[in-house]
Image 1 (cartoon, each protein chain N blue to C red):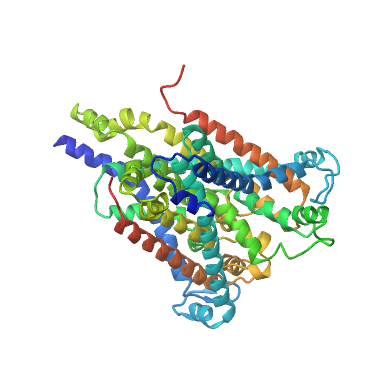
Image 2 (cartoon, rainbow over the protein chains, first blue to last red; image 1 turned 30 degrees about the vertical axis):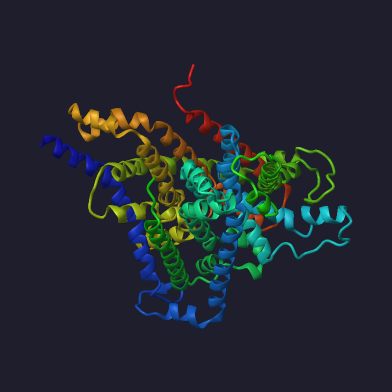
Length: 288
Length: 279
């Protein structure tokens, strides 16, 4: 009985601080964010109100809808590209590579960039794609073009390359983990039943790795959706993202309520994607 | 994809090693290309930090250390580096103090609202930093707090807490439950068990996640952008100089940052190496 009581104290000890932190620095701030999104901009800052004007502005002014649409589009393209690049790599590591040490080294090679400054990884592409950049001077050196081209930088393609480059580790990690969990004897069983490697891949490996794919897709999509650094560096006006608009509302435009409304939209989109992915994970849970 | 037909034709006891070899060859080529995609840009950054032209384009014109020299003479930059160390140290300490008990609670206890608790704890991993930054900015504004490096620390700890929880929880789940059961059977309370049995076993996960949080906080932009006052952290300083375009000085800072990351990666690898192979 005393043990029970002590355990209860222990539970309070372990839970108290984290719960306090979540309430104070996550739930309350989200509440404040939501509150501000109903307020009205008025000189010099804003005043309390309860109205949906900011959300109506987002719906009625085409520039906001088009920015949201473009952000969704770029996030989807980046996630798909990262998936297409990451899956074969992870599959090769887990199923084809026999040497465990090389496997670990290669896996680490893809994860290591996470430790390198994210700002720097976006900046890299600015130096490569710029008019006076590495790509142009390479192409000129090879005699492929005679004048530097300005089409590489400040385009949606530049955004996709940069964001894929930044977020690909988030795609490789969960897929690798999911593939690693698949018992090898399933492959053998499938082969014993006369299935080709190709059929086995599509009917056994892919379905069992889907939770990893979904987790990677969710992470990549959400992180892309909220990025403003890549757009600032390589996007140009054509690559402006929702987060850039939010930033300017909190900066030059000085319209915190509208910026907050946009941030609420972003929060809702991310939460929706996460719950979809959670639901999917619950449904496809497999025990080995 | 050209190997599809080859793979399909492979019998169970393959007498032909060529198709498999071809497929493996394709995979190896692909893996090499992917790694080249990841590391070529980094190599280019480093090379141009030693090139004596202001223009970042081929051909290289000559070797110089001037860009590094200008860095060490730049007082604003050095102050920003100091600020980043300060912020990263405090945020790491905070994230560990909250993250470890949270992971323990998730692992050990059953309580109402546990699923929600877990989801909220892990949310910042997928939540773009800008949402954390703006909601905390609004909150601090409402409370009348002044923005400073300390508000940045609170923001970083909130955004990076999940890194600690994920790594420590993963380690806890791999520990044999018999250890804690034995301790508890011998009459140790939850706290005593935690201190003498669990903690030593999750030490490497704590160190590893702590170092990762340190690096991520050191490099953090989106949260810092909204929560910093007059003081700049290093990435914020670099970000503001990037407005003026591409310069070899940024390449030099970048190279040093990469070096710093490599040192921390090696440190993490060394400190978290699997036990039992010492001496």
